[in-house]
Image 1: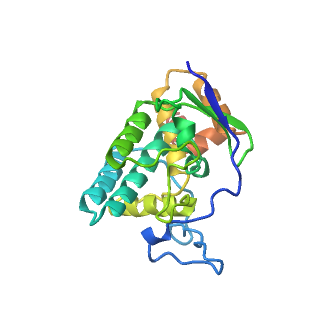
Image 2: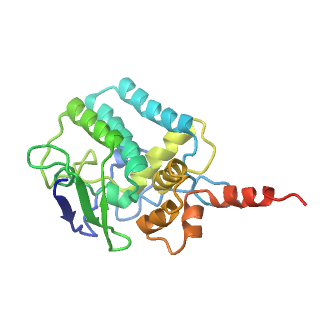
Image 3: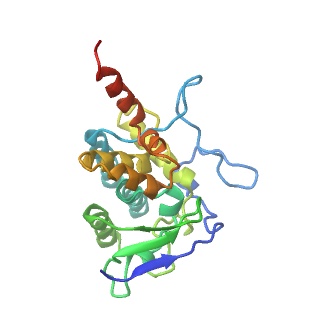
Amino acid sequence: MGAVVTVKRDRDSIKKCDVINFPNTKLKKDGTPKQTPNNSLKGKAKEVYPFKNREDIEDIKQYYRERMNNASNKEDRQIAARDLLYFILGLNIGLRASDILKLTWGEIFNKDNTFVDGIRIVEKKTDKYKTFFLNDSAKNAITEYVNEFNPLIQPELHIFRSREGGVIEVDTACKSLKVAAKECGIKQNIGSHSLRKSYGYWQLMAHKGDVMFLTHLQNLFHHSSQLATLRYCGLEDDQNKQYYNDIEL
C-alpha cells in the first residue's frame, strides 16, 4: 500500500457559495445563503434519513445524468456532474459533507495522477484524525468526471468548486440533494447527513454476519455507543421492531 496523505484543514477555508445554481436561495445581510430549510412537516420529527432503497439511489444518479444531458451549456453540465460526483462520493466514503467538500486534488491523486491508497485528514467537527479509502465506485466516478471535463488538477485546488471558483457550501450541496430527492419522488426527509447515514446503513447491511462490525462502525463515526450508531444509520426502529416480534406469549 502506498503512502497515506495527511492534511490539516483550515476551518475557515470554505467561504464562497454557488448560489447561482439556485437563484431562489435567500441571502443573509453579509451575502451568504441562509440555512437550507428542513423539508419535514411542521410538528413532525426533523430527522434526516439514509437512502435505504437502491432504486432511490439509482434514480438520484439518473436525475443528475439527465441534468447533464439537458444542460444548455458546458458550465451547467459540469455543475450537474459535480453534484453527481458529490452524491457518489458521499455514499461511498462516509465523510461529513463539510469534509467531502474540502477535498483537494492533491489529497486523492499522487504526483503521477494515480490514486492515493489512503487519505488521512483531520475532521472539521471532531478535530480527530481519520483515514479513508476510495473504493472502485468512488474512483470510477472521479475518473469519469476528470475525463469528461478535464478540470485543472493542481494539488491545492478543491474538487467541488463553485461557478465563481471558490468551494461550494454544505447548504448548496444539501439543497441540490433535496431537489434531486423531491424530483425523484422520495418522500423521506433528506439532508446533509443523509449520504453519511446511507454509508453506515449499507455497510451494516453488507456485514450482517460480522459480530464486531457495529463496534468498528461506531469507532469510525466517533459515536459514544453502538445504539447511537444504529440510530444514526436509521436501524434503531428496525431493531426494536424485530425485538417486539421475537416473542409471542
